[in-house]
Amino acid sequence: MTPLQAALENEHAAVYGYGVLTVRLAGAQRDAARNAFDTHRARRDILIGLIEAQGDKPVAAAPAYALPFPVAGAADATRLAAQLEERLGASYADVVQASSGDVRRTGLEWLTDAAVRAVRWRGTSVAFPGLPERS
Image 1: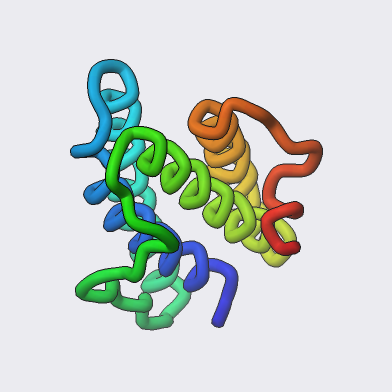
Image 2: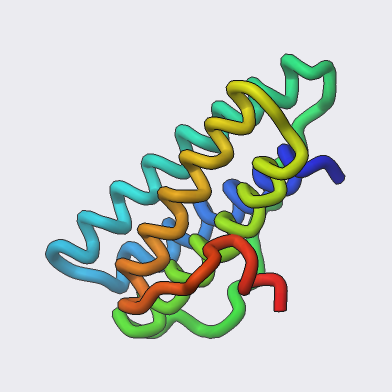
């Protein structure tokens, strides 16, 4: 699977995950989750366009995704949001490594955004976003 396809697969999962976790949040956290949901839907659509422009068929979204744990409350929701962003960060690190030009710049911008969102959800940062997620 190409890095763009893997990123698209993770964006599909993020859209699903944010749909699940948003209802467990309130106030500013719910607003942040809604914003992330909208952002990831838009990125999913952009990735579909990039993949189609290369002459490939984009991976389709699954009807549902297995969550890594039950999302019963706000603490679970924020933990899931952080995991979704960490996974996206790893995907975009791969896009940056494997691409050039505008695609590489976009991958770097989205990697940075995923790292910032992960910090906001997790409350702590990591030294090299996109890399520790692999261990």
